[in-house]
Image (cartoon, rainbow, N blue to C red):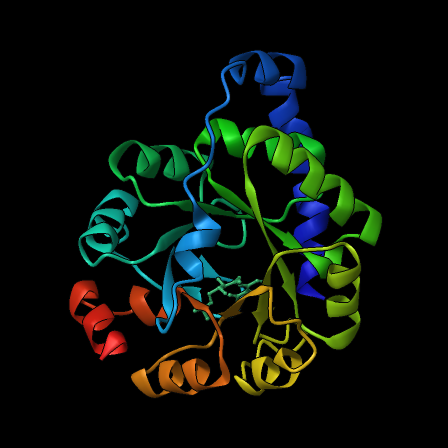
Length: 257
Ligand SMILES: O=C(O)c1ccccc1NCC(=O)[C@H](O)[C@H](O)COP(=O)(O)O
């Protein structure tokens, strides 16, 4: 499965990153920790479907999505369009992302930033903070319940929110046991790459009302937004739907209706 390949590569990549900047040195650079921008509050506005807009050049399912890719230009457009948060893909091999993109985007926007990567080690959590993230993604499919608990604790200590991602009932149970507060339902089946919003519709019913719910992947139209809002979802995470647009601002206005 693609996740296994991504995780295998990630393990090697993190080892290289540790050689370049060992944890001790990274922690020294983190000596002054700023609180995160309020990712959770911005996603849970009453009567409004919040948008997390993703900066995503390529993906394993689609290959290159945006040829003319300038992360800073895209971030400026997202900020001008008043999205609630921005997600920056930093994974380099499968998504053609880069840690530098997160740093660059941080320097030009005050929007809350989600670091979108495959977190499998403590090191990456501290690194996310240093790169300027306000939130990180924790994927239940690649982490144990204990890792979800431990990683959330570290994230809280350094001032990062966590978006805990699930795709099925078993993963959701794990995330609820780990007391995740912001739950992302990934509509993409990572075996087939197919997306269906029915995944959100189905899993929503088992999520307590006090959680913030983000529907992720495969959201392509205003109709999709309306469908998810009617279900009671708090926020959507959209990558490809914006990345394929010539005029991203216009596309966001279309999605908002
Ligand atoms: O996008 C993929 O093909 C993919 C494959 C394997 C693991 C993760 C993948 N996507 C990561 C994401 O979560 C999406 O980038 C995000 O939800 C936005 O999805 P979309 O709007 O469909 O681009």
